[in-house]
Structures are given as C-alpha cells and as structure tokens.
Amino acid sequence: MEDNDELKSGHALNMNTRIAEVSSSILSIPKMYDVIVTGAGPAGAFLAGQLARAGLLVLLVEKCKFPRHKICGCCLGAGALFMLATAGADKFLAEFKRRSLDFLVCHVGQKQLTVPIPSARSLSRENFDSSLVLWGCESGVIFLPETNARVASIETNRVVVELIHNGSTPLVVSAKVFVAADGIGGTSLSGLSRFNFETAVHSRIGMGCIINAPNSKHKANSIQMYYHPYGYLGSVLLEDDRLNLAASVDVQFIRRQGTAAAMQEIADYCSADLPDLASAHWRGTAALTRRRKVVWGDRIFVTGDSAGYVEPFTGEGMTSALASAQLVAPLVIQAAVHDWQPALGKEWQRIYNRFVRNNQMTCRVTTAILHRPALTLAAANVLSLCPDLGRTVAGFINRSYCARSR
Ligand SMILES: Cc1cc2nc3c(=O)[nH]c(=O)nc-3n(C[C@H](O)[C@H](O)[C@H](O)COP(=O)(O)OP(=O)(O)OC[C@H]3O[C@@H](n4cnc5c(N)ncnc54)[C@H](O)[C@@H]3O)c2cc1C
Image 1 (cartoon, rainbow, N blue to C red):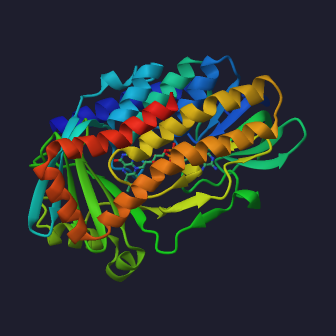
Image 2 (image 1 turned 90 degrees about the vertical axis):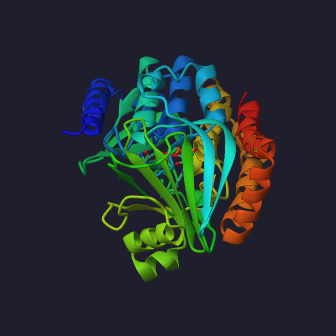
C-alpha cells in the first residue's frame, strides 16, 4: 500500500467511525422538534450547530451516507476560515494536514499566469462536512444520515415532514420551523410550487472527481485553473495528497464529447500536467446558475445553495453558504422560541437579497469574464502585474461575506 493510500484510509476509517458514533437511527428519534434542517453541507451543518448551541432541539437530516464526497473545488476561502474560527466550529479541522493555498495559477492555452491570493486552504469535502457535523452533534444536534426529507404539509403550528430512510415507509415528524439547506439539487421543497427553481437558460453544469496521484507534480500551495472556450477546470492537492478536480462546463460540449473526453480536451488545450483524466470517475451536478423566487414560506426558511447559486469560483461557494447560515440563525431562533410571524420570513428575504445576492452579482461578473478565455487572460495579466490588486479583489469578496454575517 502506498503511503498516501494508508493516510487516506486511516483518516477515512477514523471519520467513518466517528460519524457512525454520532448518527441516530430513524427508529429512535423524537417525533417533534424546534427545528428540522435538511442537508448536512456547510450551510445546514453550521446552522444546525448554532441552533443547538442556542438550546433548541434540532434534527439535521442528510440523504447521503456520511462521510461523503461532493463535487467541489475544495478551496476554503479566508472568509470561511474566519467565520468558522469565530464560531469555534473549526475545532475538528485542525486534525487534518494543513494545505495552504497562496497562488492561483491561470492557464489559458499555452499562456500561464500566477496571481497571489489571500490565504485559503484545501480540504476534502468528506472531512470538511463531517467535521462540521461532529461539531454540531457535540452541541446536541440529532444527526440522521441516509434519509431523504420532504415537506409534506404546513399546519398552523408546525411543519410536517416525511423522512424516507433507504426506501422504507416514510416516518412522519414535525417541527416549529423547517430549514431547507439541501443544495442546488435539493428536493425537500419539491412539493411546494412557491419554491420552484428558476434556471438560467445557458447555465453550465459542474463536474468533479478525485484522483490518487502519488507522483503528481502539482504545486502544493496553488490552485491550478485551466481555461477553455467551453469550460474551466481547477485542481488542488488535498490533505491526503489526492488530487481534487472540479469543473464548470457547457452542457452541449459534454453532450458532444462525452464527459471524460471533454475534460481531457480542456487539459490538453492548456497542455496541463495532469494524470489521465479520461479514465477518472467523473460525476456531474444540476445546472449551476439557478435560484428560487422566494427564500421563505410559512415556518420555512431556505439557505445556502438551496436558495440560489451562480457558478463556482474559488472560495465563495462555501463562504456564502456559511454566511447565509449565520445570517438566518437569529431569525430561525426567534421563530422557534417565540411564535412564527411572516415578518421573520420577509426579513430573511430582505437580508438575503441585500447581502447574499449582492455578492452573487460579484460572482456573475467574474463568471462572465471566466466564460471568455481572452478576457480571463487579460484580467489575470492585470492581476499578476499588480499582485496587491489580486489580493484586494479576492479579499474583498471574502471579507464582505464575513463582515455581513456578523
Ligand atoms: C464544480 C464546483 C466547484 C466548486 N468549488 C468550490 C470551491 O473551491 N470553494 C467553495 O467555497 N465552493 C465551491 N463550490 C461551491 C460549493 O460546493 C457550494 O457552494 C457549497 O457546497 C454549498 O453548501 P450548501 O451547504 O448550501 O449545500 P451542499 O454542500 O450542496 O449540501 C447540501 C446537502 O443536502 C443534501 N440533500 C439534498 N436533498 C436532500 C433531501 N431531500 N433530504 C436530505 N438531504 C438532502 C445533499 O446530499 C447535500 O449533502 C463549487 C461548486 C461546484 C459545483
């Protein structure tokens, strides 16, 4: 066994055991809660932990078996790290080998430019999301993995939720408040037309995979980004030396070429020094640019990517998810401790529009640039000539999230 494999399986084994220890069985959970949170990504797990710390009885439902990988660039921005540290939620992150990311290396065709970025960190989603769940459970969250949640009905004093574990007969539970933090493919609100997604016509989709690459020449402290007219592909080294790859690509390009060939074409276009991508196990996401018209309903709040998402860049997705969890927490607490009032939902819509969607506008501008390799190169040129400007732009995005989430 390679050293890397040993490290990987050692960590995975440890996290598997710890998650199993904090997981509850659907047969033994209470039937009534203050709050049910759906989705144990950064938004759901961070929110659930904060609510439990405020003394609420919280159920965190997750459809996947944990620890689980999720398609993601795995770059935690400075803003995310700051928020977690301030809340004390970074406790378990210290256990993983620290991989600092100091540079973004942009490859456009044969051109290559290096831009300094404010200190970020790479961490696999198996370990990051599981660490947040462990933190939440330490605070009293009841964690129910491998269970699909769906709002069945909204009554005057509670939300009724169906829980389906491994295809079994639904268990009906209820809560004073329900929070959907179930990501871009979230289905917990699918029975309620008010929350239907609006998807951008030419939205790209996300693709991702993790490769064991013991002899990779990937620079440990860098994010490598490879731009192609039909998409871009980013790579970072994870804490266990595996290579994480994530891409945003045109759907038609994938249909024409097939996933693996399309990814290989992006790499070849930039003469990327990457392992064979054609044989990697790629997975895809739903359309990335989507949002809901409203982010609240009676006794319901929507947060994180489930509320809306623009497109991945490096570090704002998880920062935004954590920030929106932090912003919605006081309103959820008020709705659970006192009674539900529509004013709380309206207030969440106002805060969400003002703080989160404004930041997504920054992503939209960035995305418009990233979809045009020539513009990307010009922007990278400017940033590499003025490194302080690069740090300032990235720092602005991250700081604006943390400042607003406090
Ligand atoms: C290609 C790509 C690259 C990216 N790169 C980065 C990056 O480098 N840095 C960064 O910060 N962000 C990045 N992002 C964005 C980041 O992954 C998301 O913004 C972040 O995961 C959002 O967190 P969340 O908690 O809102 O949702 P998620 O992390 O998606 O979590 C939602 C959870 O809900 C669960 N779920 C769904 N439906 C149900 C249901 N009905 N019942 C129970 N559970 C359910 C899902 O299984 C999932 O675990 C990237 C995204 C993509 C697609």
